[in-house]
Length: 172
Image 1 (tube, one colour):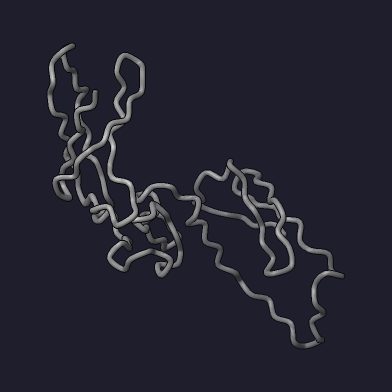
Image 2 (cartoon, rainbow, N blue to C red):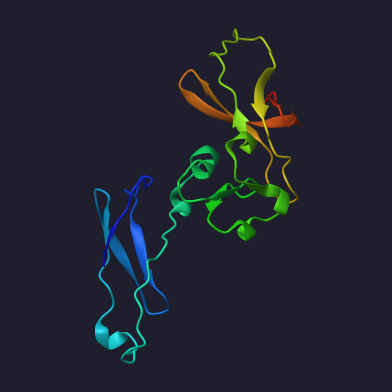
């Protein structure tokens, strides 16, 4: 089976071809072509004469899209589940109905900021402007800031003030 895929996301991590309940095989990606070795004819149920049909199949690659904007702006009619950070073709897989996003204006985003320099020994709050930041749901971890301090990565808790701002908390 060979598929020609246009406007596909990066498939370099690989792809698995699933043939119903029969088998799963690793697909081979060559440019914008996906090649899957189909099951042996002896493993496929026989189709009686005059009962077979050929269908065009819609292939959705939503699960390869890892960010809200690339998800909802794709050609695949994908939905972003904002509480699960997941792109899907089936919006019912989102945890909460209000967690479904299908337009870019509703995607959670942090706005770009200049480099923030803080002198040694000084405490200064770091507040980031955002849009559509969801309130973490029960059982979810809260926000955190990832800080690069002299080449060393530090993770500190962040406080969501509202859907449009988050502040990195002091850590010792």
